[in-house]
Image (cartoon, rainbow, N blue to C red; front, side):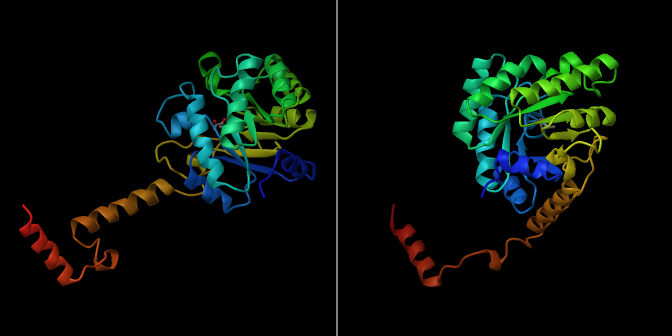
Length: 280
Ligand code: KIV
């Protein structure tokens, strides 16, 4: 049975740490379903890791809808959270229409949006309409051009604002929030001051849980490992080696063999040739 937000909150209240990973397709989702990971995020990071773009800004609602449908089909067990893309929740009305579409059309169990206090009315509107919302504070990639890609909340003012943003989201009904690139002691303070799960990424060890990008933990890039990541495999190397072995087998006529083929009796083949010769 699929985990709901209530199931996730029960685990949080029991003191269980929560693991979340991103996924963007059916095959990845099926692999996640073989694990105990309770939370899957169809993140707008798909703009970078699936589309090769340099930010999340070009990702559309259609993109998120397409990828979320595939993930929901593949992962039957975890709670699937879908990101609301850039400028799809600028007003509470936009948010309701677009989040409603994702919930109705994809089967996801929650949406996620970036931003603090100014988005509290939006969070309230969605939760009152029955749409579970996850917040996202700290480094918010959709604002990269305004805030820069750096750790957030380092000054007294920015740190206090981040805690207040977290409290505002929780009070407005957000069931949890991602804390991205936040100093570890500040993330701990937020986690102590809100009564919903905080899911860190580059936010230290004291959040209620952790989220990582599929490609980072599985080593699907061989050129860059972000500091906040730990690689648990080097699948890019494994895949490149496998593909090279495939290529050399094809070139050497060692694949495919009879074992990979189907047969046709000589008589039928001769009849096909005769039919070809007799038809103009
Ligand atoms: O889009 C995404 O993958 C995210 C995570 C990095 C939290 O928002």
